[in-house]
Image (cartoon, rainbow, N blue to C red; front, side, top):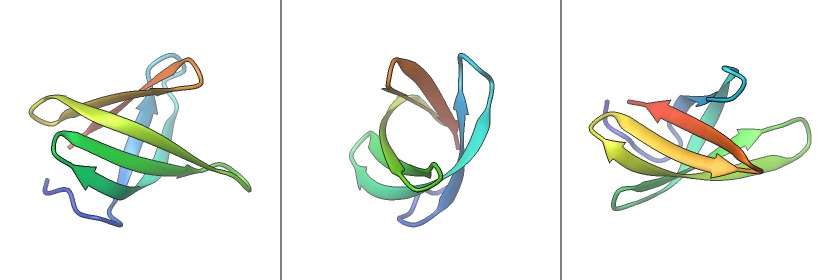
Length: 68
């Protein structure tokens, strides 16, 4: 999957196994920033490429993954 701005992706919280839609807002090298819309407040998570097709990031003490 080719990553482009404004693409909707699925982000998974590894602690809770909850999946949420997110939108790609920034792509810079091996880093991708995504925005989660959480009922009135946007949360930005910086995801770093770990290996082909797997990005990992953290926010508020939780780990998130994104597969492409």
